[in-house]
Image 1 (cartoon, protein in one colour):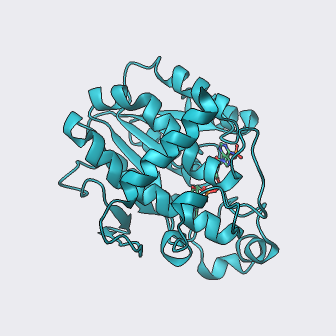
Image 2 (tube, rainbow, N blue to C red):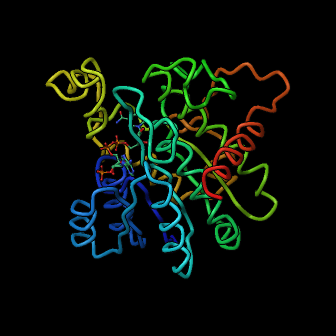
Length: 277
Ligand SMILES: NC(=O)c1ccc[n+]([C@@H]2O[C@H](COP(=O)([O-])OP(=O)(O)OC[C@H]3O[C@@H](n4cnc5c(N)ncnc54)[C@H](OP(=O)(O)O)[C@@H]3O)[C@@H](O)[C@H]2O)c1
């Protein structure tokens, strides 16, 4: 197995940290990205790997992070793994609903800012999606991505995880000809720090002894990320697909003309350019 350079966001905890440990133990170089400087620095020291920090609720941080990542000689895998479910509708300093910005706009921006470099390396872009894309991602309104007309935290979360799947497909459509590969995956129900700031119902499910009834460990879940990161596109995974275990899964979306992924991309580019220019 060739040694790969893998950037993992959300690497300071949970699935990302477990995947980083596994990839380093398998001989890869992992560039860790976390929000909290203390946890990211501690893991970087443990693994002897470089780290960067960015709060995805601040787009300026994402732009700075892209600049820092461009300084590396290569990136073979970008794992867009950072994400969270919120308790209520919060607006970031950039004016976007926080679930949308952290789970989708920020990785969308980071990937686009690195796109030429990723294409030059024939890199694979991975998204950590969720079964919530199927369970709660149905109320998808391109004109109301910010949840101004209608908002509830679970549907907002599910929609961003559906957006991760659509983004994966669209990345391959737009950049596949230039060598870029992409896949999304559903990590299972994982006993990580996930949902620690969420609605009490979710907190109870994830952060009480009940969790042992239905969750898997981050280490076990991380195997899915590791498999795709080490995988050969076309042999080990289908380009642009979203995986549940080893099989692609389908999201339920009314999309008769098959244009939603492209429209989502254009809408997000428009939203971001109005903020960043
Ligand atoms: N756990 C599950 O059951 C489950 C199920 C489906 C999908 N997922 C997805 O799996 C991914 C990883 O989650 P996890 O279970 O490992 O949760 P976790 O233990 O809470 O880890 C989340 C990671 O994302 C980072 N993060 C959170 N908010 C951020 C922000 N505003 N800016 C930058 N980084 C931020 C965290 O950084 P800090 O530690 O520095 O805060 C942490 O490194 C997420 O995308 C989540 O949606 C999880």
